[in-house]
Image (cartoon, rainbow, N blue to C red):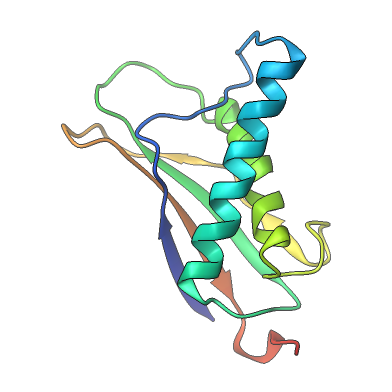
Length: 125
């Protein structure tokens, strides 16, 4: 199993389950997340796999209490972007396992990243 790390451009989650955007604003944000994930995955030249495991990591700027469940709103379009990039053919449970997002201790330099685990024998042409 190989772990790949993709550093994301955001210092805080662009979407949260607590957001109350209108549907057009929400759709724009989802599209931008999906597009960014697709391009970052293509740039990383990860290959194509029959199965991957994806975990979203977030290291916030401060120590306020946060609920990892809220990051799922950002994780979903990130995973869709990985499908768009051809990493896997679909994000169903057979092809992609999505782990619960992880929130790390705070740091003056906030960061978000994706950890993608691939199995060596799982390549497809």
